[in-house]
Image 1 (cartoon, rainbow, N blue to C red):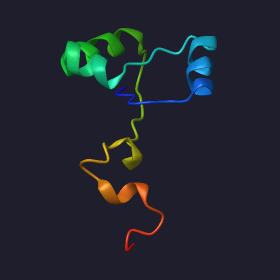
Image 2 (image 1 turned 135 degrees about the vertical axis):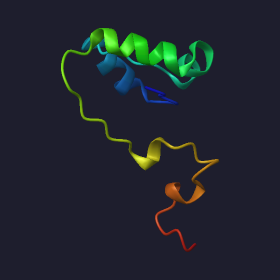
Image 3 (image 1 turned 135 degrees about the horizontal axis):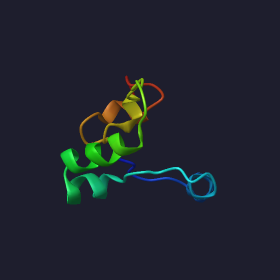
Image 4 (image 1 turned 90 degrees about the horizontal axis):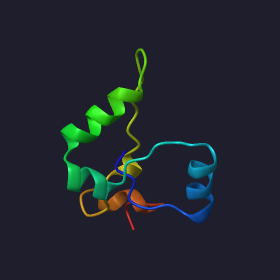
Length: 71
């Protein structure tokens, strides 16, 4: 959910494996509540959610894209 970008291989994998994704634009256009409702329709049972800090927009976490944040 909230995918900002990807390469061709990633999008091919998603399509070939019938993986449902929601782009950042989907979240903005439809609202987070609607996206979560759509996700809940497909989920059966408990889930584990992990947020990778690389998912944070660089505008809000600029040091994440650097190998050495002291540079």
